[in-house]
Length: 492
Image 1 (cartoon, rainbow, N blue to C red):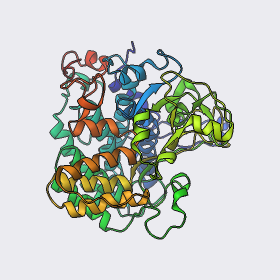
Image 2: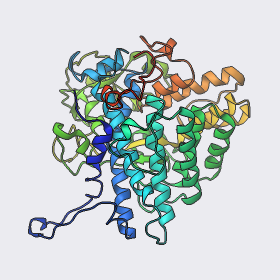
Image 3: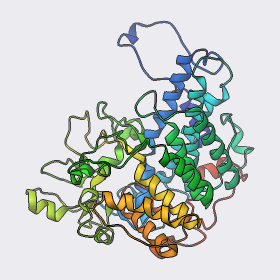
Image 4: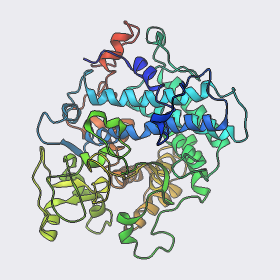
């Protein structure tokens, strides 16, 4: 068992938060230099450096994406064998417990992100400079993003406002009720909306649109349909984003594979690069998207793709849900038997082999450094414009607000996929929106939480126990260090 809690781990991370660059001649530098809150945050550059440190943790949240699918009815765990990444296997089979390294990663790295954002917010009044509100807004957006992930996975969590966790808090800070956690998320995102614009200072940084989309999503997860519809409609009406293939793009059947990263469809995108190698000794140190190599085809040899570890394999059911004329099917899911017959590619079958792979995030051949399975440069589209349209459609429909407009948004997504309009209202429209979300967002880590928040998980996921599996267990080490202050989530 690990012998340090997240509170203690975070204390270590603070020593790394500012390490954003180094001199080629650093060995010749002899001047001693330390960074702490007492001698930092004295300039705009230092606030900016701290912000980079908060953004950096986003890259370590790749496991959220994998498990968000593996826990659902979209995919199986896969891998080499029943003991290959045992935490994935347990989540797939709904046998996970409070001792699970991969769930521990979800807890640890999202709290590390909260801590780094709070480091900035704790010192937000120390130094004034033009544009500081923008940096504070981004810090609050990032805190909201990490906090939203935590409340989705674990329910009540400890929060400390604009203060970092320190040693001893594990014995005194209670887990806040979900309502309080969401209240902080909403406050953070409203501040971000009010203090950012739609154009990011640098590619990959959050924008007003990112904050509007995440706020709409947070409202939707609480069934606050009126509020969700309002903020998402404001985002849509801003005209800042569009779906390729719906504004005169030619030959958009190829755009699903070829639309570049950070495009007009990207509302918030986590940035990765293949220019720095990585190893299994420190997966969180990788600047590449580890999830991509994990989903690759085992022992693959052939065109376009690189091999990988065959985790998170889609099931035949979800592949068959796509109609024959749905352009998205073969750009979302790779039928490996058909591909091998077409190209002569070879591969071996992994554990729980289904014959399908998550083509959206399969590793492509490229010049990435080091282990290609750990340094794939594919960005993660955390919030896409199609997601925004479908969330808005759901809020308008389930809130009884405007089924006609809900259908319009739904049909925008369908039309881009080459499908005809649907004309429905009420519960029929609700089911069409749910199905469209599954098809449009397959492989992106949202399915489990969509099922849970809409009360459909028990009927869709084998082994799911109502009253238990809506949340994941608090890691055992966290309970132990709380000395009885916290109780485990129900059923574990």
